[in-house]
Image (cartoon, rainbow, N blue to C red):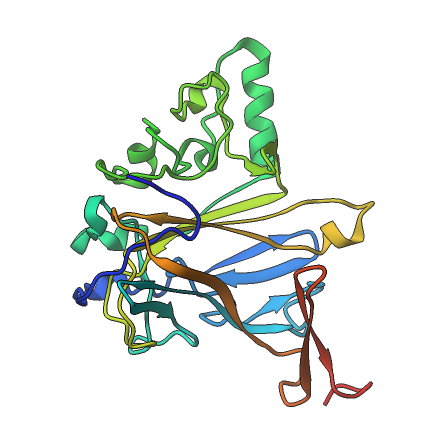
Length: 303
């Protein structure tokens, strides 16, 4: 079993997704530094529930800059195109569904509703956990966000979340600080949630994690499912001396091929509907030298 970014398989028939895999009613707000954004465990961003991506976030009345966003993935198998590309999420316009995939890209069927959830942890909880263990090499305060983190072989996961992480799953789960390098998450030994940037470990101001897949009816794109699992980690840093980092929201997509045959010419991107204040006067541009896209108003005064 291989899991590499942008390495997939296309299947040639639709699978019937359970209604409880749609992933509704579990949207969660991300609040860190000057950022306010909403996420769905089904993979869509900003549109469901709260309708905003606000930077800088000053209050609930602050204008938003992004109305909706979702990943798009496409590729060929034996000359046949497979694609997962949803836009505005509705029950009848979906390409992505909640939960991980098992071997041969099998879904969890009726158990997928358990992943209609977003896990989160903040810097204060992580530092409290680290300090607790540093005192006497024991944990006296089992902080729920740390001990319930969806990481590999976490023995405390079921007690806190009410279900086990499924066996027979390839590709790992959420990142953590593996203090003894055994590949097992052991919070009672002082291990904790973290993120990795260019191979270096960091503790963000806040981190969220969710998992979804494209193994269901593609009622948005009409394309064939690719058989991929997508794990999204969202995080931000508190950098008072760096205005760019202090206003940046990072989205790390880990895409796992849960099949055995690769696709050809795979493309991955983000579809986004920008609303920079008024939605009727937005222009888009890109800077290819920085791999950057941007949005701006048509006139100096927003409509």
